[in-house]
Structures are given as structure tokens and as C-alpha cells.
Length: 143
Image (cartoon, rainbow, N blue to C red):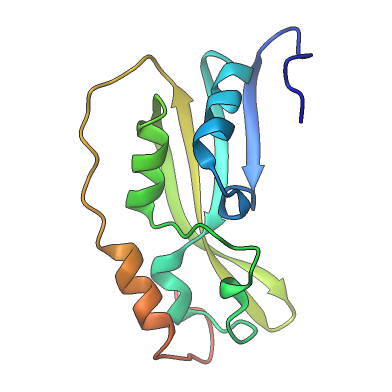
């Protein structure tokens, strides 16, 4: 969408169930950063790839064609850090999808900062979480 029409920056943005659907995250995060005031924050909630195997869900629900990005706590923090955001809060939780299905999620708040020269943290959790989700089908979501 055209965000150039926004006259004043926002102090807070909310992205729930968004980042896992976007093909090219770089330009979107740049636009989002430009929409925020300096020191502004964004709440992000995405499916937690590392815990797919712990939650009863529709078969392969998280592997639908519209989910093209998969996140762990580490990979989400690395993505946001590489776009000049610092993590101020992060929690792993589960959201009820329907009467008998749960989805594991990462809920996090990131604050817009200036450019930083921190190196990304190595993420082995995402691949391991994806591999486990193909081999285990639990009764209920385990936090």
C-alpha cells in the first residue's frame, strides 16, 4: 500500500500474523521503519516454528502455501535487528485457533533505533523445529 501519504509518524504499530506471509521482507520493514517515530515500537506476532510439533493443529496447517517465512525467537530478533530495531520484549505462547486446535506463537515488541553493528545470532532452532514437526503429532499444545 502507499504509505507515502502518511503525514506524521506513528509511535506504535501492530503486526499480527503478517510477516510469515510477505515474500520480500526487506522493503516492507524499511517502509514500516519509516512509518515509525524515532523510538517508536512495533508489536509482532508470528507462528513459532520451533514449537509446531508441540501443538495439535489441522494437519500441516502451518505449511500452507501462504506461509512463506518461518520464525524462531532468534531468527525474528535477527531480522528486526538487521533493520535497526532492538527487542524489548519477547514471549513464546499458544493461541487458540478453534475449539480444539492451538497455534504456537512468538509475541515480541521491538523499538526503532539507529543503525547498529551487532552480528546476528546463529539460528539452529528454526530448521530443527521444522524437522520435528514432520515426525511428531501431540494430543495438545505444550507450552
